[in-house]
Image (cartoon, rainbow, N blue to C red; front, side, top):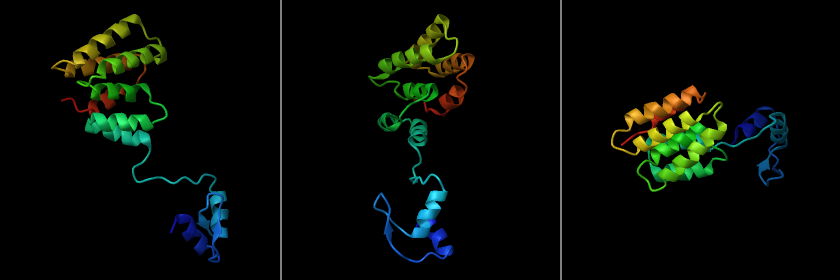
Length: 160
């Protein structure tokens, strides 16, 4: 029984089955309540694709990250950078980094050649054995260009 059904019964609606445009059985009072609510969205227990992506990034599983990223209609620069970090060691890493640097160049306010060079160096260093300094360099450049949540998100990515 949905919340709308409970509210409809409390309002004294009769137990008459009516199908709405989607073929779902609803009571007349429930239809009125749903109309008053303006938006009737069903949420899964898993949340939005973005929430699932953030959880996948924290887990560091490449397969899960790429699958959940494909579900997202659009990714911001922070999420795309986190995906690059997770892809470290994967054959797709270089391609993902080149694409991210291109997006950074277009989307970050006031991006310079120096920023692109610093990011390229950091992403190359990230693929090496000691990635902590590279993560710090990435976060520094992102903050300098107004990408505010990069440091927090990069701190959540497990680096193995």
